Image 1 (cartoon, rainbow, N blue to C red):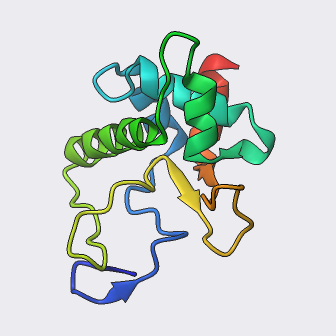
Image 2: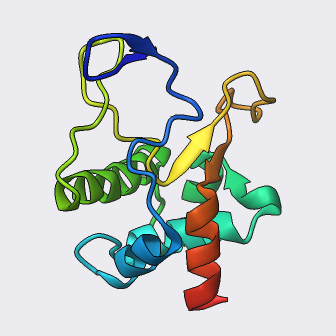
Length: 140
């Protein structure tokens, strides 16, 4: 669980602190300081998956080449970089998790820990609905 700005515990899933509109996502997707090439490739891969969801491991495998293997921790870093840039742009503090750390992972994605997981035990990340629309408007 995370805490809100009053220190009250909150669930992390289905929590969308930024609540970006389609237009705001489109603006962010076009800004290379927010979405660099790696972040765009990550979103593109998930956008093309069934129900716009995937695991970090699947994303990493898809982004890897024969010459360069991407680890799922790198995918998490791409995701975190975008989230930090968006929180900074909109001057909003991210929620604090149960360990007292800022939580960034679920700006681009949401997830449901009770849903089925992949073979490695990783749960699925699902693109935010307005991001799906914005990505489709710009790149589909």
